[in-house]
Image 1 (spheres, rainbow, N blue to C red):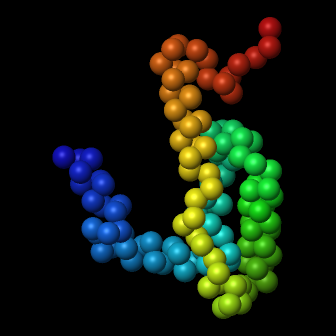
Image 2 (cartoon, rainbow, N blue to C red):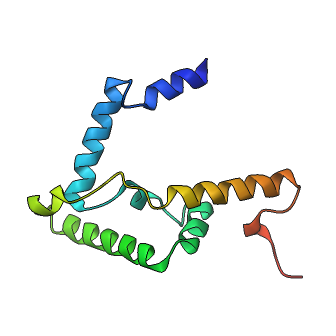
Length: 123
């Protein structure tokens, strides 16, 4: 019951409040030229750090460039020009598949009783 409710709660196609939230988030991300996956912090979650290490370097470089541009615009109290905002794709994912793979590997490692990858030490 709770999982059906939680699925309904976050689905923008079914819940009008979720649709409003998605629209607002989309406009905020477009203002700075960010994607939703750019909001994941590799210092907070080691799975995100591992996923970023596995994706191609060009994608990571583009992510870093978007973050630097967003910080620069924020410090200047400005937004991207309207023509550039129209070209942004805030919900186009580049990290979710690799992040899901890393989480599955960690779950499998835990199920087999091995130490997590990040806690291993050399003898």
